Image (cartoon, rainbow, N blue to C red; front, side, top):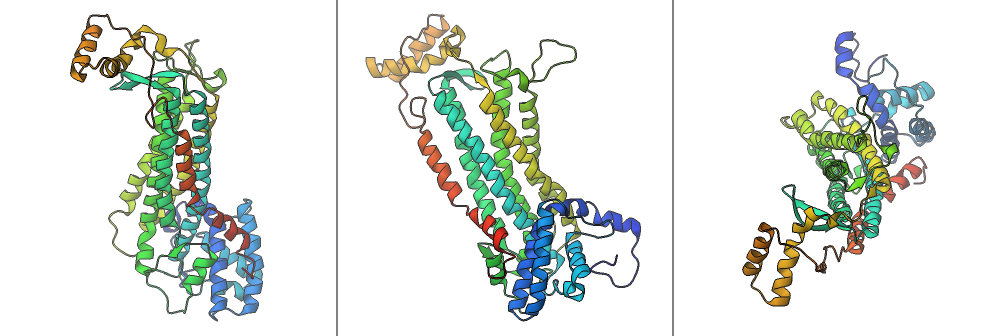
Length: 448
């Protein structure tokens, strides 16, 4: 089949295979969004007089049909077709003849792939934020349930001070709120329209870029056409940095769970059905689920650097190097979503152990409680109280028989889970996820 850029000569099949790379495979993820971008573009062309109204009326139903096929997994990029852009135009031309050849007016595959990737990333961020919220809710639920169950706190992996499961679960819940702040920043970068920048230098066609911005539900434009092209790589790096932040939280939670499930700690227990065994050691019950979450999250945290290494030293303008970004970027979303799903499931199912801090080896963790008691009840200067308790510990005489009295915000006795929930609610409400569904439902309606 002739390519969109065909000039009448045959191409080298080896070069063709190398330059196309994995585009046919990865562009299937972008197909619904390429069709959405095309629908918005032709509606704009009709408005500015570059496409007859009767042609628009023919094209929109065909695009809607292709969109449904793409969403339901029936869209195929044929072996001799370069990419999703070529396939959409080919199918429109097969169905409508010369009318199908008109959809590329004022457009380049450069701004097509930019808008495809932004629409795709926007939709996937909405999904990931929902899954992060599910994990957040489970962590908060477990925090509230276990607020009075003590757990040793550690610094340098040495027993430090009393903590609680409520504090531990709640810490990871609040960590996700900051991750969502980063995701919100990525969303704002994504939610700007590059369509109309063409190959990076605009078009002499009288395009109405504000119209396509409205039709596609973007908050704003990438105004400068050169900068719109420079967003390729920058956008992916910003989004992957937000995902790396989520992965940092989930991976660290997974590491804690691996540690706490070991016999040396014994703070949590996984149901047998969530563990794996050994082919040689009959007693083994391994926390593979958390080990794999940890590994996937480590991989996700490397993605911003991988993107920087591909795109970081390119001058302005488009270069084919950017094609490789799809191979790094697109799989990240499923990888992160899977980790969030399995982490939420596993955290919800695992059991916590009670009475941990009753064991004598954890008595020194209460040393600060005794120091503070001496300061508060007996008016002993802090340094004198510190030395007195330290000497008792060294001589093996230290025992704490008081009660914990942590009252400040964010402590064992005052988790502030309601305030953390309000924080998450406020962050997520600022995204505007409803625009994604609105656009996808209304774009093919000529009255929208």
